[in-house]
Length: 79
Image (cartoon, rainbow, N blue to C red; front, side, top):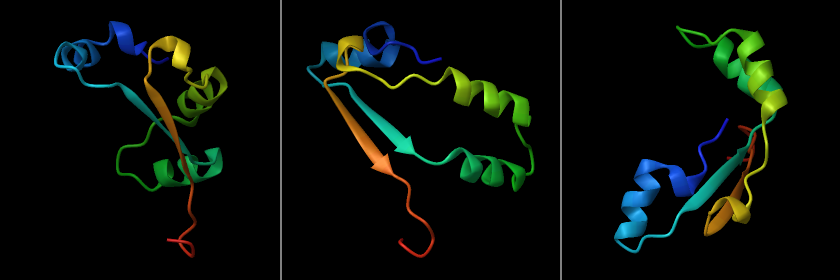
């Protein structure tokens, strides 16, 4: 689950100095995440990844973000 930015400590500090709070959403397909995880020395159990995927909620401006930017997934051939 995400911490709403208005209650996030670092967001509060930034706002105190006039900074804006931006959300970056990386649009990486689940199968790519699972493959990358499997290649790590210390993996996260697949059940945990699945639970995180199933509980994911898109961020909204109503949560207090000033801007939300979506980063599309690139394949190796595209990068």
